[in-house]
Amino acid sequence: MARPVGQTSTRKDIITVAQDLFAKKGYTATSMDDIRTKMNVSKGTLYYHFKKKEDLFLECVKVAAEDWFLEWAEQSKQVKTATDKLYLLGKIYAMDTKNSLSSTIPEFLGAEHFELSAIKKELLDLIKPEYTAFEQVIQEGIENKEFNEGMNKENLVFILYTTLTGLSVAHSVYIEDDNIKVENMFREAIAYFINGIK
Image (cartoon, rainbow, N blue to C red; front, side, top):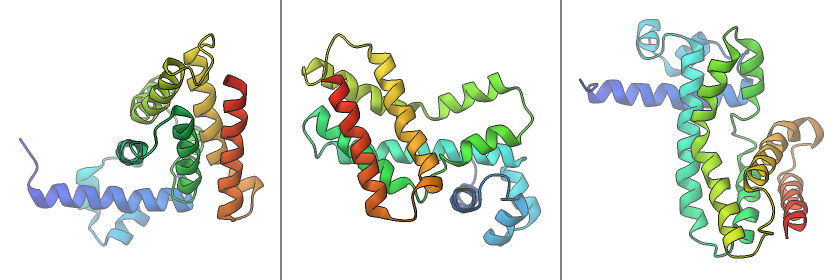
């Protein structure tokens, strides 16, 4: 049975507020009560939609990954080559550093006590749309002979994905809050990557 419209709207609002709090405060420092207070809803309402903070966080990651992929699909139509798409990926990641849940995922994995293999599979499923974008760009570049076709596609995708997500996590430690500097760092990472696969 489908949820009534008001319940669907409340659930979406909870996710939006939780994403913001998790991104700003981190996973551990954000409590369900923080989310409830900011939402101005009862404890019962919050827990009706999400039984545990872990469930809410995973739903936030899922929604963020889906939104990211939709935005990527729209923006990537504006560029023609796989090389340009790689630079676009770097730019999008640079812009997302301020509002990204990426930096909270390692904290989440360290904070919760669960079977790591099960949660790892769940997280991999959640980020699949984002990872798919990387696979498509690398495949396109190989097919168009922009990138060396003798290289291992799966390894290239993994290296690129972990480079950009790693920069997203680490930038706040090593780079002051400077948008231009952050964007240049991501652009340079893409340039190094492209240089290595041509």
